[in-house]
Length: 302
Length: 256
Ligand SMILES: Cc1cc2nc3c(=O)[nH]c(=O)nc-3n(C[C@H](O)[C@H](O)[C@H](O)COP(=O)(O)OP(=O)(O)OC[C@H]3O[C@@H](n4cnc5c(N)ncnc54)[C@H](O)[C@@H]3O)c2cc1C
Ligand SMILES: Cc1cc2nc3c(=O)[nH]c(=O)nc-3n(C[C@H](O)[C@H](O)[C@H](O)COP(=O)(O)O)c2cc1C
Ligand code: FES
Image (cartoon, rainbow over all chains, first blue to last red; front, side):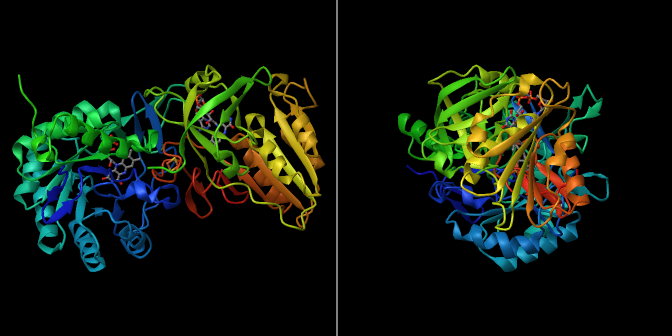
């Protein structure tokens, strides 16, 4: 059974990974033998400088999902390279490092540092970052996306994946802009902006007022966006948004995704990524499919 | 993915007083791993409503893994309907436990507000053989929160109670019992668990009398594993996760 996935020059043993920000640094809890079965690891987004994150409460549950406003708490790329990367490199699973800059220059500096560090399979550009010209997000602006991807691509020694935001009118426009600027893949979706109010106190539930919605609640939205984007681009699509089970992941693959990531599902069921992988294999066996390529985009339309 | 994710079986689940339930779980080898102050993270439903797991302090880990809980919302409501033989998906024990009192310590003071009493039975099990004075200052709202403290007394703990309505013990908040604390920084050690205002009062008291201590904090949790950074609270050294860096912190650390 062939499950391998290629993104640019990078090869991944299978199509199941974990979404950035949902898979921990608390290594002592993870069974390494189980982690080793994953197709890739994507740790929490790193920025150029350390970020302390948002004031609590940072998370809240809602029907079939959650809101988060963590504020990309991270130690900064230098500490990441010095402290986290060595341990991550020891895990024999391809590593996709998620990065975010508050300007193009910051993205380029982070890329240079990671170029020097080595041992990485691909970069994922978190485009939910400020677009300094227009005061929106880079992910909300085809021009800014194109410019950023092009510049990073020029200096990166690793394949470059653009992570798209669903908070746009037409995500396919951004996906195409990323592809045309040289991206080796796109991942989608990041969280959908939302909020909750505590009626007893009349205050927002989150310290940051608004946050990102994730989990099963967003799966149909994510599935449609992946379906639409995969029709428009030729580069591989990494899909995420509410995946809890193998059936969820198979839906994304049938819609055209090359890889699938479990995010929020990890919090409810830490075994979810493995369950997803085993379930995909079982499905392929049952339907006598020997290459994942045969499943990709295999949706039958009415 | 997780070496401490287990499916466990409910052994019993019943009220110990009008307001609190005790749930006993057949948790296999996990009982040997539990340390006082740690918690288990329970998935109360196979579905997605409520969505998050729910954290509960280990109340006792002997033959079974036990928690003591208060029904405050939908998750604990579902938990209270679980019967002997039901299966539950549990993570843990998780988090940083209470530290052992230093050798010089002569008085161990456990300060509990309501359901915050939960981690102190297992703690007194661990301290049983220590020849130091052990006192539990238990502040409840009313008699409905007062259960049989025999198991504490068996471990050599002297129990003092206060209730806000005066139905049991001293009338008022648990701070009314602080007179029992020996104010010697070298030989007294405070351990507290309860609502935030109580922990803040303990912090003030510890500051005022230069007493060492630890507090067990609460915050809404998603992963419980230090992965999502969702349960962070402000401390004197920046944000720290309640689930992984805590729930037990030095009494002087959190910024309440
Ligand atoms: C480390 C830790 C240990 C805990 N140990 C115990 C224990 O031993 N026994 C026990 O009864 N409870 C304990 N709790 C609190 C317990 O987790 C909550 O009471 C429970 O999650 C409520 O779930 P629910 O669905 O019933 O209530 P919800 O419907 O979720 O909420 C009902 C009310 O409880 C509040 N609440 C919800 N979650 C929390 C939380 N994590 N902390 C504080 N308040 C909350 C809500 O704001 C709301 O007012 C602990 C919490 C933590 C963080
Ligand atoms: C607590 C939390 C933290 C997240 N942190 C990041 C992050 O640092 N970088 C990023 O690109 N996406 C982050 N995400 C978004 C996820 O990677 C994912 O795109 C999104 O949650 C949708 O997938 P899901 O529904 O499976 O969680 C975070 C999501 C959550 C819930
Ligand atoms: S609950 Fe996820 S870090 Fe604490």
